[in-house]
Amino acid sequence: MVTLSYYPGCSLKTSSKFYETSIKNTFSFFGIELTELNDWSCCGASAATTIDEKLAYALTGRNLAIAEDVGYHLFAPCSACYNRSKVTNEKLKKDRVLRDEINETIYPLKCLGTIEVKNIIEVLHDHVGIERVVKKIAYDLSSIKVAPYYGCVLTRITKMDAFDDKEDPTSMDSLLWALGTELVSWPYKMECCGASKTLTNKDVTFRLSSIIMERALSVGADAIVTPCPLCQMNLDLLPYLGRTDKNLPVLFLSEVFELALFGRIGGMSSHIIGVDGVIKKIKKKVGSME
Image 1: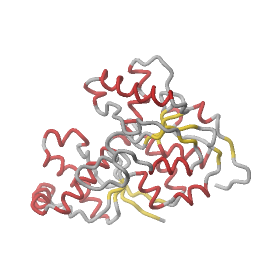
Image 2 (image 1 turned 45 degrees about the vertical axis):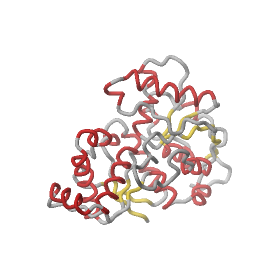
Image 3 (image 1 turned 90 degrees about the vertical axis):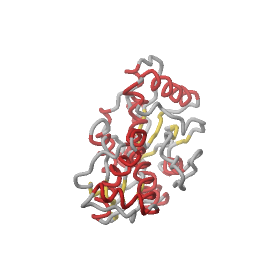
């Protein structure tokens, strides 16, 4: 049994509740226990740092301090939350002056940068592993062609090493391969979907997300797979943003795990773009055991 502190961030308690459910289903199967941070708060995501950098450090540092007090490494499934938590953790660990200032702000909590911050891809690689994934899959996904979509912030960690190549990551690809899907080759795995521009300029999100969708269609994908709740939401919202052309279902990485392990997706009804076509393509593996 592996235990991790869990920082859901705002998305997994609101617009992406079904992502949280999917993650818990998958992690539970592999013996990964999540302990949600008590009294966590918004990390500021990409907005706070553009207004007040020290405020952004304090917001994220507070959550990190709670995780340090619990004593487990921190799991942050949202790409923006992961990015901010990773950057803040490293910054406070190395910069004593800033650390003292932030700790004064968040007192009586204290953040020393002593834990690790991990995203969903890292957790599945580090605590499950490719070999175990291959052995546990119960449903054949070989007929499903997927386009791995990382989004623009997951690996682009400022001024520090990332867990994967910053411009051409392959770690999620290896997990999807282990799950038995067919991977399509495409150059848009790191393109921006519009991010939070959905709230202030929907035309920008529509244009950028439409380009990603068109490219995935052009390479013959059956679905786009992402670990990022904002990326999933923006692409899934395309019909509401005005796109009338064909759209592909946009699955979370953990939902592909659900398909391979259980033959179903718990949050199927939460998808705007229907996932029925993908589910119909899978079949039970002969002699498999969950």
